[in-house]
Length: 284
Ligand code: CAA
Image (cartoon, rainbow, N blue to C red; front, side):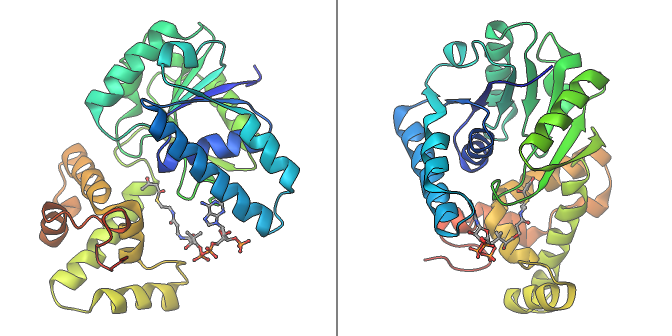
C-alpha cells in the first residue's frame, strides 16, 4: 500500500512540522485544526521554516511554493480525513482530547486508512483500543524540530500488524527520516532514556551541585550534546517533561522515575520554558 495523501490533526509545534515534511516530500496534506486562527498560525510557521531552508539553500524557492500549495486546511475532522491513506494525530498530550479525536476519526475515515499517533507518552495500545482497527494503529513519534531531526520512533502497539508497520516504515523513509522500531512500553525508548537524564540534571540543580548553566556546560562540552539537558527541557516544555516522568513513574511503579520536586515547583509556578519565556533559563 502506498501513502498518497495524509491528514495531520493539530497544527502546533509537532503537527506543523509533520505537515511540513510530508508536503515537502511530495505527499499532499490535509491539515486539521479547530480554529482558523490556529491554522493560520501553523501555516505561517511552516512558511517561516521553509524560508529558512531556502535561505540556507536546502531547497529552492519553487519547492517552498509547491510545499505550501500541497497543504489544505480543514476545520473539521470528518471532512479532513476523507480520502486520505494515513491520519497522524498530533493534538495535546491529554487522553480526553485524544479520545474524542480518535473516536471522530474512526467514524469518518475509509476502511483502509492507517492511524498513527505522535504521542510521546500515552500507550499506543490504549489509543488503538479507542478505535475499531487496532491492527492499523501505530505510533509515529517525531522529534522537534521535525524538519531537522532524522528520527521517527515507530511504536508498535500490542495488535499493530506487520503490514501496517511496513507501510509506515517505508513512508518514513520517503520523508528522508530514519525509522526505528520499538514496542509499546511507557516512554517507548526515547523518553525512557531522555527523561531520567533531564530529571537527574534537575536534581543536580535542586541539590546545589551546580547551576543550570554549569550542568548544561558539562553535558555540551563533555558529551557533545547540542543542547544541555536543562536547555532541552525548556525547549520541550517543563510541563511536558513532568507529564512524561509521571507516565514512567506510574507505568513502571519504580521510584527511579520520581519527578524532582524542583521540576514540580517550576511547573506549579508556570515557568514552563521557552513557551512562557522562563524556565531554567530566561527567554525574554
Ligand atoms: N525548520 C527547519 N530548519 C530548522 C528548524 C526548523 N524548525 N530549526 C532549526 N533548523 C535548522 C537551521 O536552519 C540550521 O540549519 P544549518 O545546519 O543548515 O545551518 C540547523 O537546523 C541548526 O539550527 P541553528 O543553527 O538555528 O541552531 P543550532 O545549531 O543551535 O541547532 C537544534 C538547533 C537543531 C534545535 C539543536 O540545538 C538540536 O539538535 N537540539 C536538540 C534537539 C532535540 O533533542 N530534540 C528532541 C526533543 S525531544 C522531542 O521532540 C520528543 C519528545 O517526545 C519530548
